[in-house]
Length: 44
Image (spheres, rainbow, N blue to C red):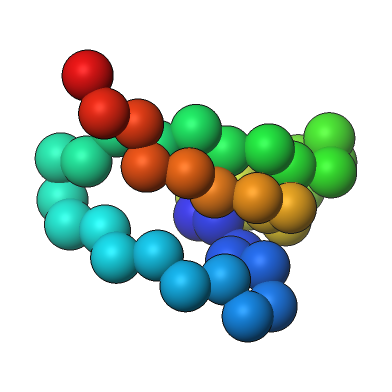
C-alpha cells in the first residue's frame, strides 16, 4: 500500500508500471505500507 504525496496528480490503472521514490521507511503492517515522495508512470 502506498500513500500518495499531497497534490500528486497521476492517473493509474491496474497493470500500469510505476517508479516510486519513498522515504525509506516500510511499516511492519500487512500489507506493508510506505510514504511516497514521488510517483511516476513508466512507459516501456
